[in-house]
Image (cartoon, one colour):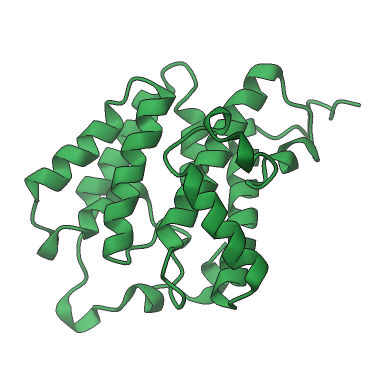
Amino acid sequence: MPVPSAVRRPPADLVGELAGAYISELQQGYLADRSAAVAALAQLRRGAGKLPEDVPELWGMAGTERLYAEQTLSAREAEMAEAALFLAVTLYALHQQSRPEQRMHRSGVELGAAVRRLMPGGALDEPIRRRFVRVGTAGTRHVLAYRLREIITLLRGQSIPLDYALLAQQLYRAQLPDGLRQVRQRWGRSFHAYRPDPPSMDTSPDQSASPEKDT
């Protein structure tokens, strides 16, 4: 039976909440060196930068079945939600690779700010900036997925975390009419607003937020 419209959550919010919960479970298991989580992330990495229809061997592994446990989605909503959730989970799996003591999913770290942290001292790095711009100008979901994979690979190299619940929510909204423009604006604002901590307050990625804030 469909959930009454009065309590029906926006699909973007649902996707973000489910992505945060599922990725947190995977992250906790991986950091605890649980064999099931380690194996799951190894398999999910094969889907990083792809969409669900491209890797049917991962169906049932990315948590997309959870989308249907709480409310009824239209066919179009379901397609967009599955793509956003799958992409967020598989990109996280790539991001967390070989980081057994660091949380690569971290609440409150938006994509633009994470990319800016790649630039030493906050100074603009033109090659990195161009890669970031390419993400925002992607014309299709497949192109966006591939270009995000490039960015996540860079973040992983510097152990810079990202809020994957927020990313999943934005990936859903990016598929709505005029949605990518709005998401691009938010990524751009977080990129320009980022300021590095003063040297006396500088902390490592694992110390910049308490475990209670990881979702």
